[in-house]
Length: 143
Image 1 (spheres, rainbow, N blue to C red):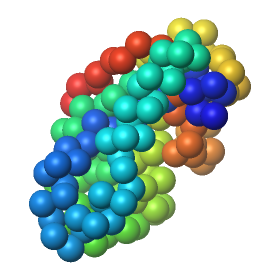
Image 2 (image 1 turned 45 degrees about the vertical axis):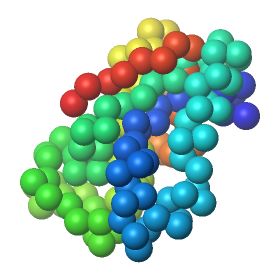
Image 3 (image 1 turned 180 degrees about the vertical axis):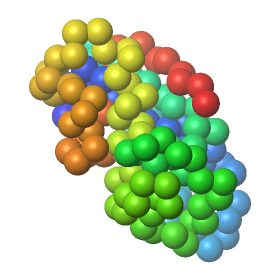
């Protein structure tokens, strides 16, 4: 559904093998089958003519404020709510990361429109959703 309905899908290139080494999270990470999900997205985006953008694993998507761009030095996994001391933004950690990842796909879209609708940079602050990322050829975004 993602590859069929969206021109650009943005995902993080996660180190799943390294994440499984955390014994308290290993079962949950393995059950999620992230590597298989990414593999399926890769071939289905090629099949449907959309683009898959894999953002580098070292891109600090969770630590960047999606409103003002301030980067936190550290953000522990226990912190599930992101709070920016610079601008006062408070929202879910995953929502903040999803907005930052969605922005990584914006330079790659030239027309600003696609099967997922019009993309306007200003609308990502409040309306970005983790399901709204899609791709044609595999690209890698740097830090």
